[in-house]
Length: 503
Image (cartoon, rainbow, N blue to C red; front, side):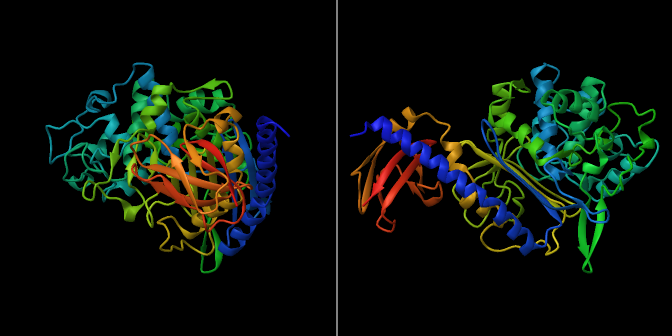
């Protein structure tokens, strides 16, 4: 008779094989989703903590010039850019150049205060977590337009300080700074300006030198930095049934930015759109999020300390019913530059088998983008597209758009999530920190554990597909598996795995 180690080794190899077979179907499903939602084009990358697993590209990058998507295609990734800006800020904290709890007025050189609470300082931490009370008020769009198109670039103080050309009291919530969440783009324009003030470098140059270049990725807040302008996707909307370019339609010619001449760093970091203007491919964006997933280091490159990553992912704000604008249930918890998905039913559900996810989403000019990872399942994904002909359809399953839900479900059912879990050692699988009995089992399986907090239990079949997800309260220890077919299953609790045989 084979030893238990031999059996486990065989099981381990079978899981990987089955997972890889399943993952091969992800491309077919992605194409079907693209057809059903009339996508112009898109990219989908899945990754484990040790690197990229699946890398898919479909459709067209440039419709007018008949350029197909490739794994090297870059997108203007919209609000996922905020996470890159947050990384830059945390690097300055590590260099002792910035105290995230200090009044930002001391950095910017002019007084920034909520007119309703003039004695309460506004801090960098509040900007990162969207609790600063500074919001995208009635003059924000005109300020942003003039930032990008006028010479000289308006000073950021013009929208933040009373008497400025773009100042409005409606630029602030009537709430105490640090207590109320309101997602805001201008928070990250301020953060970009803070980077410039502290480094005396333009924001785009700092991020290229300290984030993109160390990782060896072709990505930047300045389109002129890209090696090949033809690899930049045009972003489209379908208007009156006609695909219409919205942004980055450069026709193969590098644009010329005249308002960079004589620009003084620290004037207005919004010139480089730290809130949404990062251009990056899906595979290179995965590398940035792998840094966060791996506590600051990926592929031998260290961008952040473990403590900085932990702080970014830790809870800075959680919705309690009245302490912020939760955007219809999408935003229920935030870290520092990180959207914390709580997997609340009918609200911020993404991957059905994940209890929590960390990352960011984006939407601008017709693009929709997602970048999230699950630390418990050791798995992450990037999804981006450059136009949705079917429009922004929704349903009651989640606040995410239907096309996003379609992609999330495809990842859950056909991705290689189980393969990521198998990066754990066999010893972990043999001694998972909990016992299940009887095993084999036909109806009720009991879980012997010592946890006092609720347990999130996931049951996967031998192909790595999630079959059942159960939450056990501290006093509960049994799961009914009568509805499962006979065969081999795996029970995962807190990233620990044990096998189960249903008879």
